[in-house]
Image (tube, rainbow over all chains, first blue to last red; front, top):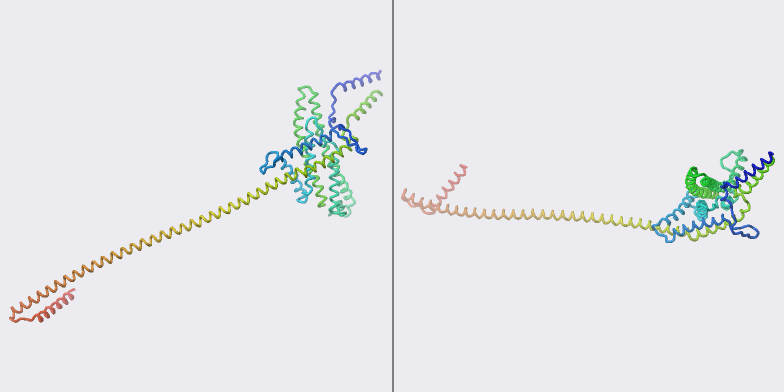
Length: 262
Length: 190
């Protein structure tokens, strides 16, 4: 008897779940393969994530190209924006690394634009946010880690290992400090990638939940999550910029550490 | 009870397959890593090749233009200052010149006045001396006349008194003597 009731209850619950709109704010992080490609047995399919990377970079390059279609000494609005983006990154490099950091300018500028435009285009309804993919941010973080570490060894040779030995410490503390330094150094790519990925994921998840409530609540309740979603979209735009800025500035800091070893 | 447990288990299994962060789905990793690297490389190439040089060129051009404008403005200012200094110098020279001319005019005027004055003085002095001469001459003549008359009178008088004619020369001498006497008296009286 109890079994029957339980079965019926379970069936009823399942039915209800089927009928009601299902809340799945993580749905839009789903990577969907559009064109499956396999290269030497490795999957390099073009997915929605990859397509939105291209769209974001296309918009970035398109805007820059449009701003620079006929450069004037007295710039127009778009030209000013293009120049401002370059000067912004140049300023970050000058502030964190100094003049000799300018030889890494193209790299850092590309990184900034990539992250910024992936973050911001992700706010277009129905789009996909490539920077909400841990593997995308991880690729950059590992790339930056390898680049800065390589730079450190290239610049200082084996002397770069002294980076893990903080100066001015009693020798007794060294067995404690050196592992901490090594761990914090190795944690850099993790924190760098997870920060960006988590920010993007969290923001978009919150937006997804708000949109779900807006769509499912009756009209007298829907305005509240709708209003929140409007405000939060603006906040997300700001966060997208801030995270791109943080990613860039931390990259600069790591390069600076490699060049100057604090 | 078991059924509920079963249902819950099934639901949990379904949940796990449908949600959970899709970002941790390892199946999608290789393609995204590959395309991220490729896309980044392409972006880096396009930026380095087209965008950065274009912006740098225009920034440099603007910097150069501003620098040129600044130096030109500086030059123009220097020139203006030079012109101003020149103008001041010329003004000073003109003022000095004017002062000199004025001074000269003043000198000329005073010189002319002096000249006219001295000429007038000379003339009047000449006229005066001429008049004095004339007066002196008249006086002399009158004196001579009086003297002649006095001599004649003296001759007449002596002739009448003593019946003896006095020669003209003696009479003259006497008159002369009297006159000097008179002159002396006059001088003493003064």
